[in-house]
Every structure is written in structure tokens, then in C-alpha cells.
Image (cartoon, rainbow, N blue to C red; front, side, top):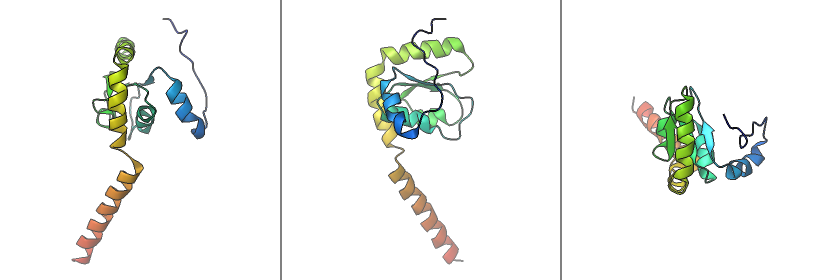
Length: 125
């Protein structure tokens, strides 16, 4: 396996993450389980094509803006990386749109709406 262009890294401070994502050819995230998958959206926001798992919450979070692979298959991951390189422009464009669907502002507004609805229902009892 050729790994000349793969760089394992340790801890990266939060403020350095956008530069790291932006300098990557692809963000490969073969997670076996994710509660949400924020790193996928972070990479998309930095215009980095994403290869991620076809499991857990990741297909919903990534939508059609990432290459989905079986995280237990090295062959699928390798093909996914090649696909991400080939389709970089379209994945980058779709990724920016997908990431905007999950903004903190939108999340806060939707959460507040749920709380307000719960208060209305509770006050009616």
C-alpha cells in the first residue's frame, strides 16, 4: 500500500482545523458509529471532498455530498478516495450546500421552536 501522501497527525487545536481541512485532498472518515458527524460538515465547509461511512448518522449528515463507503472494507475506502479525487469539483459544491443545512443558527432556531411548542402544550394542561 502506497502511503507517501498520507500523514498521520496527533492533536490539532480547534483554531487550526480549517487550515488543515482546506489543505487536504480529501477528508476520509470511516467511522463505525457516530452520534452526529460534525467533522464531516466541518470538512465540507472548508471545501474538502469527503469520504465517509455508510453507517449510523453519517449518510443523513453527508447526504449526496460525500462518497459513502463500508468502513470495514479497505477496498471500498480506496475506491471512495479515488472517486472523491475524480469528482472533487461536484463534491465540493454539494458539500458547501449540505453544510449550510446544519448551521448552528438553524439548529438553535429549531431547538427554540421545539421548546416553545412544548411550553404551549404544557400550559394547555
